[in-house]
Length: 307
Image (cartoon, rainbow, N blue to C red; front, side, top):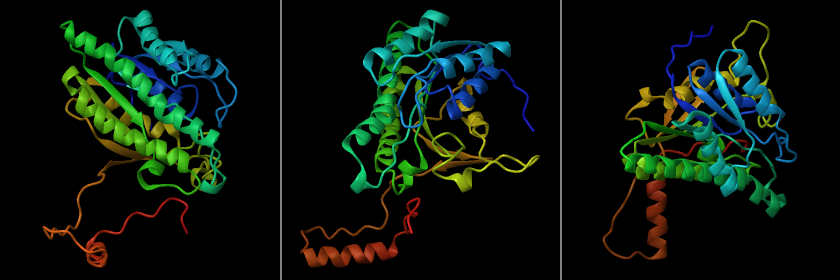
């Protein structure tokens, strides 16, 4: 059962990176259904980041136009300063404004740490972490300029973290590190950009995409005919659309998990059991104290894939 659109994002301009397939496509279509004009960014790379094609982004734009919406293609590389800057200028040139940025682009190159090449580390951290930083930086600079010109925006940024970044994931050291960095970047950006009318939140989604359908094949398998498809990317997009709308006023600096029909507010690092002696300890005493505190602490959530 789908909920009829309500025009929640009418007159808003939304840029979505990695919007040619999977979650990004679902987000772009959901924003358009709620009245947003959408900048659809995608390089059309393979699941491991190789190759390029404008076809995926063009197909999504065509879907939006066919449904009566408005959208344009952006095929710049958002991991480069010029590509990220042009994402913002594409929105301004096409629609005269930018209201919401959804950072979603990414790919995988999974390896155990002892087999992980430096190139695979650099490629994954570049597209996920730098690919969040640069669009965010250029969008924030635009919104700061608007604020100083007396036109304070109602701006929204939704970053894409992952359960791998929040809990760890065996065989995904590069990806988990980048996604953990995105969660921290979200907190910093929310604190720094609030003065310019910008709310920044992050999502850790679970859905069937090219990045998950093979790695987690059993969990991501499509259900039988007529059953609820819990892992459909479209289940995640309603929260993204709400966070990207003016209706999310006051919600910033938060990280959510979303999958199927479940939404969870994640609670990150915070002090647990503590002991302050007020003086320097010996190593043996430090170890004894650490063991006592650990016994009183909550057990950490297991790393995905750990045995």
